Length: 340
Image (spheres, rainbow, N blue to C red):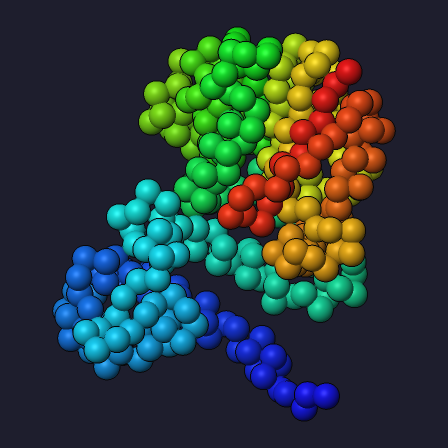
């Protein structure tokens, strides 16, 4: 039997030190500087506008954590850091810090004990899902790049680029709570005949429209302003995208929304849900399971639902079948539900 160890306690209670070090490296553009060839504390200090001593201590910390390597010639990037933390990379994630460390989110977790006592967020009645909450424009601008690969994977999963087997073609797609809009845009990019209708708050849709324009699909990109629970969707959609949305609400509210989605789809149409979906034990896989805590801290009644819970919600809304697809290199899953 192994000896008890306080290591996990100290590692967890001081986790803010790691996130602060990572944020400092992103702010100073350390990863890009190393990618460009500045490998020593002296070279990095000059490139990043920092003291060699400070850079040495920061980079050694990042080696210990696993973001950097170190040898006789200096520091280097791990494959993950090269892909996601060098600002020259198309998959750069440094911009997401603005949302992930947003004051509203930090305040929510500062009050987590109160949220546990209450059973929901202590940052206002509705938390981050209050109508027209300003955090979602920050989300749209900061988190869009993270969703580029999942958006492309979903477009492929749906067969957006194919005209065989009834897939592809003149799709009409509703993107609920579109945010940055990248999921609908990925389908429009793969399928030149697809038309996208994005729904969100007005200040968020500004970001989605900018992204659609940059992707060259603005001529096939329309918008509906307002709450997904309240506004009319229209009808005859081939696809309804419900990405990173249902986890914000309780199951009854979700079923009410899914009834609207069902009515908006054509027969044979598909509702496509992207979510953190834990296994039935609710403690694995770790990333999906831990997301429940985010919902406890930031919403009144949201959760990370299991696949059986999603199946039940969609079945009660009238959908014939639902299937789950784990995305590669992601903590999220896609659920595809078909209208009979």
